[in-house]
Each structure stands twice: as C-alpha cells, then as structure tokens.
Length: 324
Image (tube, rainbow, N blue to C red; front, side, top):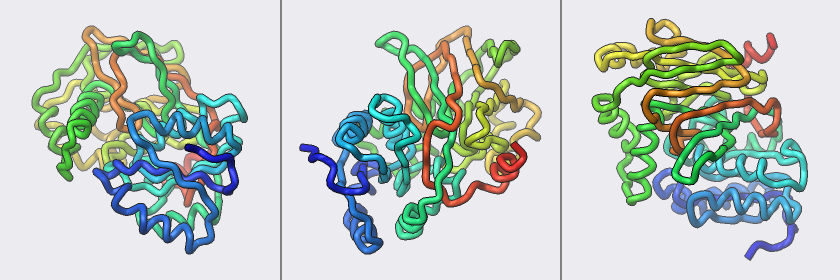
C-alpha cells in the first residue's frame, strides 16, 4: 500500500527489466542510493502498464522527483503516467534514470552511463533539460488508442521486431540476444508496404520497409536511426527506409551505427510536427520498444514537456541544440 509522501524521491523499479536484472541488482542499486544520501520511497511494478498507475498515484500523494530503475519501456510507462495525471503540469515532475533494460536507448542521447554509481552521481548533480514528447494515435483490438513516447517510435519492420520480442518476453524467454534473433528472422520474412505519409501537409507515397519517428537519436540497442534528432527542438525526426533487399541491409548495417544512415540511397530523412501515415495493409507499431498496435497512425509533438535529468547531449544533438 502506498504511503503519503515522506521522502524526497520516488524510486520506481521494474524488477523484470533487463531480463530480471531489476530484481537481481536492486540490492546493489539501493545501497548506492543510500551511500549517496538519497532519501526515497521505492515502489515496484507487478505487471505491464503498472508503472503508469504508480506514477499517477504517487504524484497525487505529492512526489515530484522520480528515479526510473528499468528500461526504455519502463520510462515510456512513467512518461505516460506523468501525462495522464492532472495534479501538476508535466514539467513540474523531474525524471532521472538508472537504466537496466535490454536496449537502453533513451539514455544514449544524454550520455548517461549504464554504470549504476555513475548514473546515480548524474542524478545527484541534477542538471535538467525539458525535452519534447511525442504522441501517437493508432489502432488495436480496443479501437483507437493513443500513447506518449520519449524516445522513438518505429513502424513496419521495427514494429514487427518489437511485437515478436515483447511476445517472447511475456512467454518467459530469457535469451540474451532475443532482440537480435527476432531482428534477423524478421528480416527474411517481412514484406515492404505501400504507404502514404503526410508531413505538415506535404504528401509522400512510397513502398516502405520501415519508418522511425524520433525524439531521441537511438533505437534497437544502439542503432542511430535518427542521427540529426535533438530532443528539444519541437520537431519529430522521420527516417523512412524505402523498399530494400536483405543484401542491401546487411551491406549497410554499419550506417545504422555510425550516424551516416542518410548515405543509404533508400533512406529519406525529414522533420515535421504532424505526421499522418496510412498503408495498403496493416503495419505494426512500437514506441520506446513496446509493441502497441497497427496502422493508420497520427503523430504529433509536444514541445519541452518532460523535465529530465541528463549528463550531456551527444555531439550531434548538442550542435543541433546550440544552433536552434
């Protein structure tokens, strides 16, 4: 049972993050928090989407500083909890992160290390930035739904990989390379789709393999799919990968990691504030690594709406932010 606020920090722990790493390493993390002088109340998620409920409940009780101990999916739920509560403006809540997931992509944009002590020291320093949030409307078995995201959404091939990976995790798979296995298997089975993209009134039609819609730069465990994204510029970064052969993917895989994906001829990089996507067949969607549903989609940006604790921006994002 949640107690009224008596601590400065709420620490929200996902014990299943990182294939059980959250549960295994919590003793070590809590000891480091104690040693660094944090006064906190710890709460633990028990099921999918539970973090949303816990955040709403604890903001109502008075908590304004939250440390997320989990992965990108946990951070996604926390952000959705922040947007779902109606007690205070979203930027009245400060979010820090100790990342223990399998992808750990959100922290990469901010150069937050995976070392627990270093991450805690960054949180203690308290350097903040108000980053943008994305919101996507999509379809699933319940009809039209919406979800906020803090890092990146992927559709088409990316959505299929997330769908398979999430399903395997829910069945109890502890395979360390689960994402990579599903990525490789999907590469040979996924078919490109004809889509229509409307970006702030500009329409594009193409046969597309995958699309990324980014606030941050990284997804898929370190792939720099949106290399020019800066998290507080008020724009969504759209990376369209048109129809591409498996051989071409393999030949250009390094471009997903070196920030030069724009050099692949099948790739188009665009930015916008409102993006609507329709397809000739149903295509799957993920946001921050979590499978959500399927097409059609509408994306919008909510500028500078999440207050986060960061280390420093990556070189590309830093340059872009300074010139904004």
